[in-house]
Figure 1 (cartoon, rainbow, N blue to C red):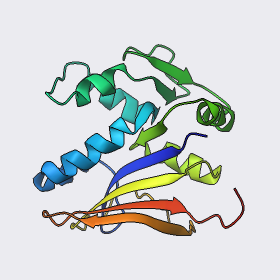
Figure 2 (figure 1 turned 60 degrees about the horizontal axis):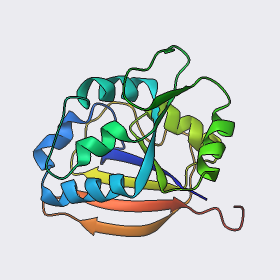
Figure 3 (figure 1 turned 135 degrees about the horizontal axis):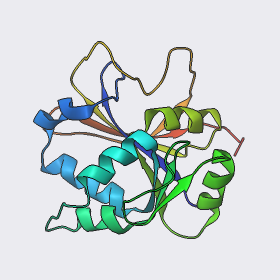
Length: 183
């Protein structure tokens, strides 16, 4: 069964919103982390807001390593209640039964399903216990406000699968939910 992987840029105080604050820390190490993450996946799951930003930014991009081609050509499932027409290549709307649709995606053969950003959707998927891995790049900044990955009152028990300190001060941590023998 495929895994649903949530990928987030996170400040020390847990903020994931509007990650322009990550740009000064970008380097080849983080680029490789993101490259490997994308190429370990063969489909994207996105919320409406992230989809709209990506659909505006990615179609015109190119790069030597093929990251942009991969982003533009892989299948994308977009959870939305308002968009009926999706213009970005290989995009399909998910209007209802999020749990059923995500479980169908997970049951298909292939690589991981990658979810970038999409804070509200991540909250829903956590509530449904559908997240299998969190790929977090934790930045040495405190923002003081903004949408957080783990909301006040949310409890989660996670186990570290891998961690690495990058030369820019960013820490890459891969967590999986500690479900005990539940799943």
